[in-house]
Image 1: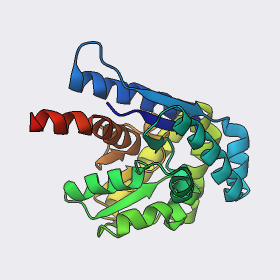
Image 2: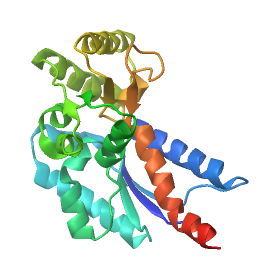
Image 3: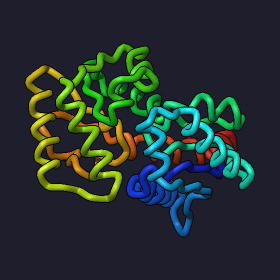
Length: 238
């Protein structure tokens, strides 16, 4: 099993979901007492979020690179960034640290295409919704991203930073997100992508008028596949 390094803490709530889902995936595949071989660098979200809000992406990149270097020193053979927004600096991290990054955008876009869907809405922080670092991963696969109106963009961003990242799930916000998904269905959107790893805490992925893609769960499954690929290849060759 390959060792995976996780840059987490942004927020700790979604990082906990990653830890649980990756370990459950490994246990299901290997059975017995098996669990995932991981190193985690969990960041302090408050100063990190302040840098994001101030568009200090150089500071964000340096913080992530420092964390990734620690993970590499621990023996990690690949990296997972436990946040959609953190992927804005993914290429800089990979180029500096010289480790592969399991990209959340690639994992999710491939799943959307495999399911035959081509018109989706991407929910997330304002950076995810408006900037190209994730959007291009979808668009280059022929997926049309339906933009939210400015009021909904701002409200989704607020829910993420003010509530979910702090570990708070507010019932009124759950209702708002359900209303948003219903409105998107009326716009002939085929599916919704939860492009923030905390959004699954507030959106029921199984009980909505549209299919909902949980990027945390999809990314965790990608991690399990990557960690076990050498074992699977060896088993196939035997």
